[in-house]
Image (cartoon, rainbow, N blue to C red; front, side):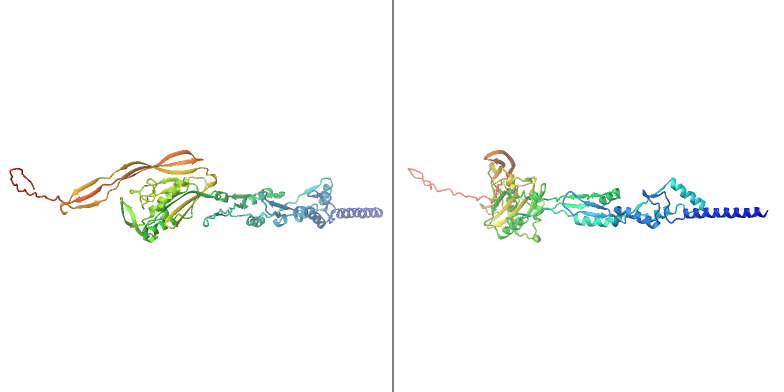
Length: 465
């Protein structure tokens, strides 16, 4: 009996030892401070590495990714290359988080549960993947800086006549970075994108220096003399002519003489001088402006510009041939013309001595023709003399009420001439300067009392006094 007890005790101790030994083995097997075999993170075997070593190894594997950069440039024009660095976008991986998660596998539960899990890993590995994080909004600052470097406002070419020396400044085409589109390209391609072409929007200058280069010579000029004019009239001619000096007309631009010179009023600088009103020469504000309009009219005719509106005078002026005048009157008679060319024109005016001049500048280099204006007197209508009786006048007297004048009908033609050959001839106006009767008031006729002569009889003859 005693022997049996001893054997039992020995067996019990042996079993306990075996159990304790087995426990110690399991405990030592599963409690190693390293990654268990079969733990793989981002395709990297972590077995045998401590947590710190595993984290370090993963960080090393991501160094190339984190240090990447994106080249931002444009091929359309020379510009600096810009770079967006991943690290500046806060680009990083959740390495430590995933590593700790992977390291914890097989470390929860009972010893047997843990052992079983660890053994499973030896035959069936467990894969973990890190994920990246970043903040692309940080790139907006750089993109705005790129835009500041590249953006250019368009600058139109300018034209300066400079007393006959034509000076044209160079135009600049504008460009601007489409920052929103640039950021969208980054969003769509990140991570992984290596190059981004900067999206640039272009805004060409509306007026280029090439455009102004077509103003290279005089295509039409004309002058008239105001010799003998009153000081007020000369002043008004100078003032109205100056309104057009330096005028630049783009293709399609239309000009109104009345709108350009403004109302003929004293507050605008105009003075009183003789004007033609209803066929009469009478004092009026702005006298002389019609000579300016007539001179301009002839210059634009010779330049070949389009005449939109033009009127003749009621009384043909002496300073131009009949049919080539252009009358203006605020509110109802205007001279309007239009730049019908495909290039700009420039108008210069001046008063030198007793003459007013207009020059129209345009593309003389491509103008292989000349323009001639001629007139044809169609009819001359003589005036009539009319008399009306005025009983209040002294008998036999005659008083002039209205001066008469001869009337004229005139056609005006424009010819296009090239190499001495008339290519075309068109009638541009038919004017009628109305005749006007002389009108007199006459007094009653003088009553003549005839005396009866005395008759002396003679034998031979009768002699009457």
